[in-house]
Image (cartoon, rainbow, N blue to C red; front, side, top):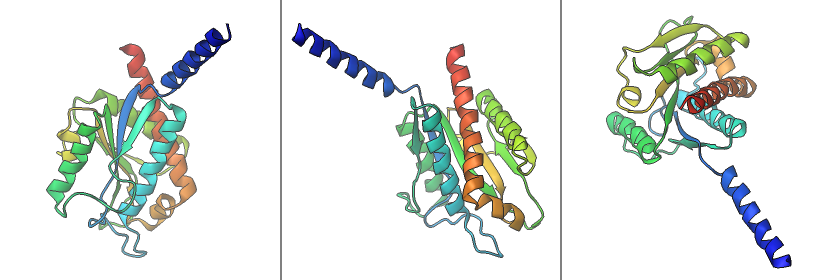
Amino acid sequence: MIWIFLISLAVGVYFICFKNHEVSAIVVIDAGHGGYDTGAINQNHGQEEKMITMEIAYKIGQAIKKLDPTIQVEFTRLDDTVSWPMDELEDLKARIQIANEAQADYFLSIHLNSSTNTDAYGYEGFIKAEDSFSSSVYEKIASSFEDLSYSQDRGLFTQTPLMVVHEQSIPSLLLEVGFISNDVELMKLDNERIQSALAQKIAQAYVEEIHKEKEAS
């Protein structure tokens, strides 16, 4: 009887652990630029896009895993070291390849905008025209950013041929979180507390839409 109890207990523990690690979806999060490529630079203060996107991307991933541990999160990079060549085309191909190798279900690329007009501000998204999933995610992000009184919604665009979006078969969103060229917006983008708040809202949008899609299937 003792052996039966121990075996039953072991099976139960194994089942619980297995269920806890069952993957319901895979999201690849791409921190734009990195390594040799600084991305945009604020001309007054010198902050580089690649460093801020890395911080925000990581926070989004951590928030997704906390909201739903069954969603597996992979990153194209977690530091300022990149494995791909110093070539823009190969750089973009490598990010897509990471998503392919991870067998990702969804792809999110985080960027910051820049303009010669230093008064320009706001966030915007880029998706494929037929990508209803990412469109719904963006709508949720915009709504929740509005609740935070964060910046302004500049819109969702489908006609700009961005490689990391349009050359993938999975739902893919490139999100420009704000303008690094705007000193006021940069103060928010470079603030850890605000980064965390924005990341939480982005993560919630993804988790809610993933759950909605799984329930419908």
